[in-house]
Length: 428
Ligand code: AMP
Image (cartoon, rainbow, N blue to C red; front, top):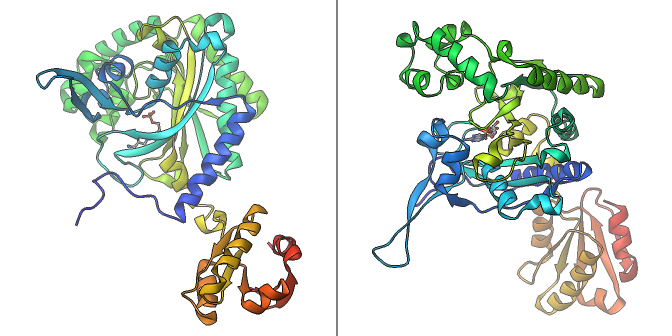
């Protein structure tokens, strides 16, 4: 028997109703902040990710699904392609490729699957879904302003509140600019020198190539050493410090609570200044619902014009998991308003016509067929969770009045066609 591949999974009803509930809230909230949707391809040239996410990251180093495509001729080696492990790189590529700044498109969001070859566990999959948004644009358009950072964070707080997710925690840090990081890296290297021999193999490698990444380490034995390392907060230059202060001041004024965490460096290389994560207690080890930050140099790193920006990616799988703590899928699923039951094969056409009329009134209709006699129809209607059952027999069609039974109260009435939809709507 063929099963879904390790790390991938089927999302089944009624859970899919929760996913739709999340996505429609996302679209509503993002719309209010004037974000518009972008859809980029699921695979891209490998170089896009190695250049933007960074060679030294776990993602590029060991988690990407990469393959050599075929060229036109049998002997041609094609391009190296990769299933996208995240979506910011694709969005920035599209921004550059279509000169989106010329069209004033500077606030974009996406919803879609991402792929990483991670060790699967609860809340961590190899195909997972991200909801993300990016604000980017020429510096002359204000894209560097701390107002953008704060607005994005406030939008996220609004979204989580709207979804009814309580108990989230916003962790905030500034990772400074390349200048600050050069000094910080220097200090980190010095501090690591005498202790790195006692650390895990990954940390030993990171200490040489990109010491900042040491803060990504999850190995318990390394944590006391990491606790004592210097922190980026001491190395921020004046503009970076002022930017960070300004973001915090807006958040305080608009009433979005946060905690400072100067260990937060995030897994991707392209972040500058503001870095953040929202965590949720109920999620256990994989407690980050979303992460993001500023990436002022990314567009240039990909060959584009200066386009400072800030964005985030929500792990939709985890968002749904934390939602299941408070809302059950059953509560957001829409069950049929009415089950239309034809009595016998000859009644199929009339039943179909009635169902068509009712659906035009925005009712959810389950249409039965000639297979079931009356008793079976009642059973089917109950199983489908329908509120009403509508009997379509020969006498009813002749009289143009139908038997409508409320399956919750047991009340049954005879009602003329023209009043049917109104009656069912009223009873919803
Ligand atoms: P990142 O792109 O690594 O900054 O991740 C952003 C968010 O995506 C995280 O906070 C998680 O919620 C989610 N995420 C990342 N990797 C996975 C994964 N393998 N499975 C499920 N969710 C993930």
